[in-house]
Image 1 (cartoon, rainbow, N blue to C red):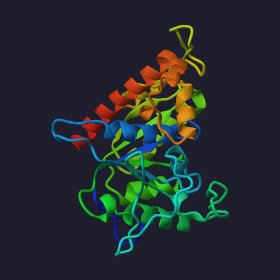
Image 2: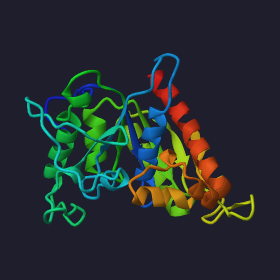
Image 3: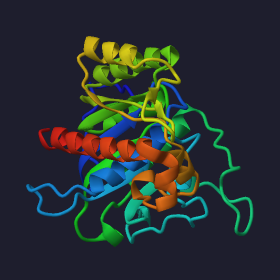
Length: 299
């Protein structure tokens, strides 16, 4: 938010070394699903420079439509506990700490979820909530010990208040833009990249989701939503690397609905149902995680 007296000084998020934003120009492209799976793929990496696995967390900054609680199987979780200094402690599942506006909404009754609760706020309230989620969370394990190597921030779609607040207040180390092959989504990719560049956030790369489908009875890619050629052309014209192209896989949606990210699933039945597409999806996501970590490490 612009203030009198000069530009705002960007600052780091407490107990976080690197901040990676996962964004999209429009909704419905699978951004949150990719953000969560990318976080787990990063956490599976064991870089020689660290000698251990990367410590990763997920921050859901979609104030009006938080998806991380459902994707992480935490939609029935209690409100986050507080430290002695009043900071919120992340809620963990599958070994990964998370924070979301979805954990702070009131439940409709005992044993109920918060999925029916709506946030009806004006811009200033949204900006205040975003700042609290950014700076009032203690990402250390139990409020003590080491913090995170990487915080993956799941952004809301578009180029609104939340994106500007993050870009102006936080030293963001990279941004990943997610799209699908349709022209309407590709147009918004340009806007998203332009917005991040205006607030001096480096673009790590783009990911094409639902690029193609491989049916169980064949190994031929079917481009259900159009050729990826336009996506590749836009990325090249904007000088943004393509991190990967993910196929359309049923198990990704099933895992998200069940609160189990796809990179963590390994059942034989699911593997047979998803055929070759499932293995490709996991492998590409691991390759993306390796590229992203290398780019963040260089910052």
